[in-house]
Image 1 (cartoon, rainbow, N blue to C red):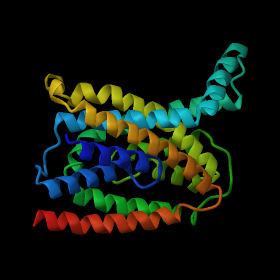
Image 2 (tube, rainbow, N blue to C red; image 1 turned 90 degrees about the horizontal axis):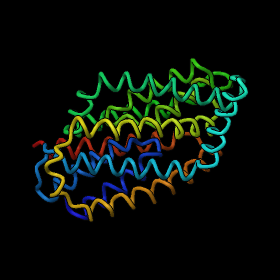
Image 3 (cartoon, rainbow, N blue to C red; image 1 turned 60 degrees about the vertical axis):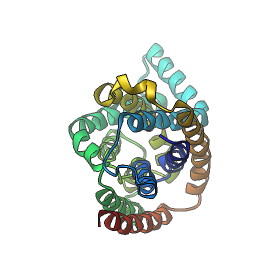
Length: 278
C-alpha cells in the first residue's frame, strides 16, 4: 500500500463515515480510481487493504467517542445508577436497552449477509447502484415522515435492521439509520445522535471479529504501517470535523441535499465502472 492510497482512503473514510453518503462506497470508489490510475489489480483486495480498512474504521470510531464523550459518560453513568436503584424506566437505561436491541438485530443480519456484501466490494458498478438507492431513501424519508414521537423499541428495531442492511457497500449506515428514525417520527438531530452512538458497538464488534475471519496474519510484517498511520490520522481528523458539521447541518437542513450528492456520485461511478470494464 502506497502512502497516497492510504491518505486518500483514510480521508474518504473519515469524511463519508458520518455523512449519509456511504463510507464503504467511497472507500471502494477511491480504491478503484487509484487502481485504475496506477494499473494495480482491479479485483484484488489483499490482507493489507482489509487490515487498513479495519484501522481507519477504528480511527473514525475514536472520533465519535471524543465528540460524544459527555453524552456517553452521562449515558453509562445513568445506566449503572438505574441498575443500582432498580429503576429501569430512566431515559439512560431505555437508551442503553435500545442500543443493545438494535445492535443485536444488526449483528444477526450482518452475519448472514457478510459474504455477499464482501463480494460486492470488488464490483464498483453494483456499489454505485446501491448508492443511488441510498439517495432515494434520504430524499423521501422526511417527505413520508410519520407524526413526531419518541424513540421506542419498535423504532430501534427498524433502525437496527437498517444498520444491518448497510453492510452492503453503497447503502449508507448513517444515512439509512437516520432516515429510518426520521421516517418513524424521530427528530433529525435526535435520530443522528442515536445513529452515531449506535455506530460505536457495531464498528467495535466488526473490527474485533472480522480480522480473525479474513486476515492472513503471516503477511503483517510486510504491511506499510507508516502509510497506514497517515491514513488513520486523516480518518480521525476528517471524521471529527464531519460529525461537528453534520450535527449543525441537521439543525437547519434536511437530508435531501445529500440525496442529490449520492445520485451524482453514483452516476459518475457507474460511467467510470463501465469504462474500466471495457
